[in-house]
Length: 343
Image 1 (cartoon, rainbow, N blue to C red):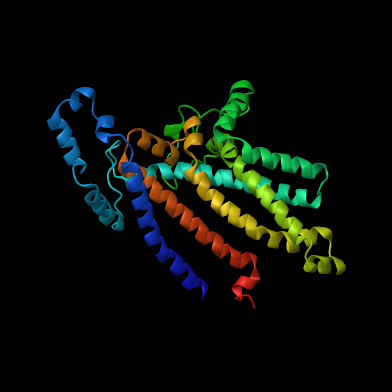
Image 2 (cartoon, rainbow, N blue to C red; image 1 turned 60 degrees about the horizontal axis):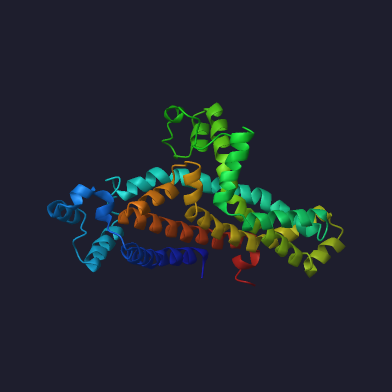
């Protein structure tokens, strides 16, 4: 199977996957022991059966559940995610508005975990059972086991409230939101660079650093541990001993021969973690007042906004599938044997 056929097959498999995700999300959201009508109408309006019936008919809540899902599925196959009960806007428009902020946060958290996790893992493997190894293992253990919401609150208290080293919640300083026309990508760090607003870029990076660090600390621990274990396994292989016997520098042996092969399981972890970061931004975005998909999903759940909840679920599933596909493609570049079919 060629790479083009593999990519096409994976893209086609996304269709039944998204349909299955939509069905599961529909069943779970409609199984909640709550009525969305009560979440949107006042107590006085709830006492009027005409108003209640009109609301249910307007949003299609008076139809049987199977018919509601069938209508939703037909619209989904046409690229229509429905209309949000809370914002009264198409869910697709809401996702377009809030997705860039979450993507910026998730990408920042992923780069943070990569740039710190891989070097820590390599150093930990090279200095096995020494002081640096113990420090790296403690950092990874703390990163994996620390609750995100607790770390977010503590980080805000220390670095913003007590020390004043970093700015508080939000994507920019107060009063600066209208000064930035983020209409290119929606990511402030990129748009400010493209517009030549370097002072605003620095401010955007400062605001991004703390929530991205908090969100990426768990992935940092995983990347460090996986890189360390992979490096220890690779360093015992015959081709590493052969490279050393040829007189290559230790730095060249580690970076060119050992690390490249050890990165294959690390890339898998990074890819899966990126999807997990996107799905787990709810607490971080809520604490840091970050206007992304996480806050949008939280507000949709509190109001039983079924179309919005399902729209976010499908979007996260699509991101997971896309990232997994990119990870599989990256294997071919990391391991030449995959490009030649193992020959």
